[in-house]
Length: 247
Image (cartoon, rainbow, N blue to C red; front, side, top):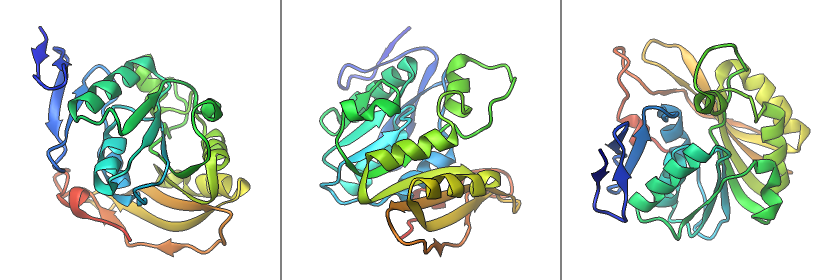
């Protein structure tokens, strides 16, 4: 049975749930059968900094949580979000409709390598990409493409970001901490210099994810922020996810 949310003709299917993003009354619909977002998405959205007139592009929009939060926090006029998987793009559109952002966020359901068909040079690009190596783990095709480098390996991600950015434009990205060196090497190959970096860790002291800001054609000089603890010892997310900003 479909539940009418009575807002912009958005309906909840039986396998969907709606959650509060704890930011400006924004909501997000997640589908249990598709890929659901993690704390990485919220941290990345807080990390991204833009000017309101910047042309921003997201690589791999998923359910739309990052673009929705980035738009709200930076008051952007336009974000173009690439999402190659049709089921995820449809859910993304539903979340855009739910939050009345049809005129702020544009979805492109295509491979990001074809970006030139849709956008000119961007000021800011951001991505929480599929960052695990390809495995034999049995899961749905949607989840596999969203989580593993089936269609978007590290080198392709960096190349696409560099090609679409203006000189001086910024790329915000997160990756497993264990693959930080690989990410930095691939960024360097395409003249994206890392300017800011920090790691997240769980409540038990384990470092998990690296977050980077890289700037096209910039000098290689990086500012290292302190680690961000995202969970308490019980594994529960901390409020810092919604309030911590890096400047």
